Image (tube, rainbow, N blue to C red; front, side, top):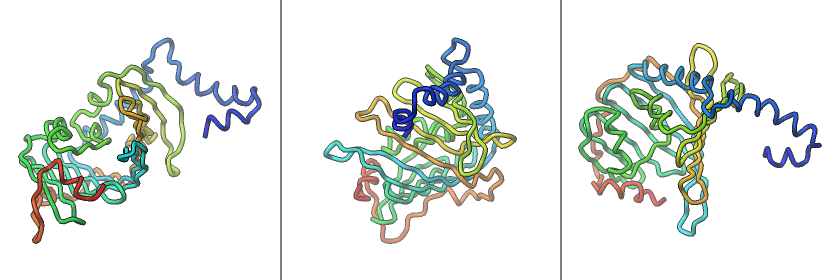
Length: 255
């Protein structure tokens, strides 16, 4: 959209649109803007300081089809986290729908539509569990860095660029738009301005994959004082379900 807009505008107007962005994205000769890093740390500290939280999200995910074409899938999620060792996510929509449970001892994924589940032993903390989640189960959460006990450490690992794009709004909420680069990934984040610096939008482009697939996530309904019991994170096998190997549970959804 920006490319098309700049092509049809007169040269002077195009330059006028670009200059403010360039001024913010050129932090005194350094590729890592101190302002961008400071805003990111404020957000990270807000998440790290919470003993528990819940949020809802809507995602747009690009995934490769068998013919190589990127398909665009829409999904939603409800996530609940309780430190140090409990996490639950309920994924719905076009992306493979499944329920995810972690109770400090096991990880479980359940696909309600096909009535299959997978179960495996897991490390004793969210950090340790997330670190090996994709390799062990095939599950990958684009938002996983936000769930660690130290999100700032995860988000800033290997950064080669950090810039402040500028102030904006996400669904009427004032936010600061930041952009970052690291080996294999370009990503942007929109952080709420003011006293509640939570993420409102996240865009990730995987530059180490063919065709650079993208994921866009919008966050709503942040709650830092949720009512969560230990049983909310325990998977109870429903009647009439079948256990299958973990790497197969997502394939069972037909995606």
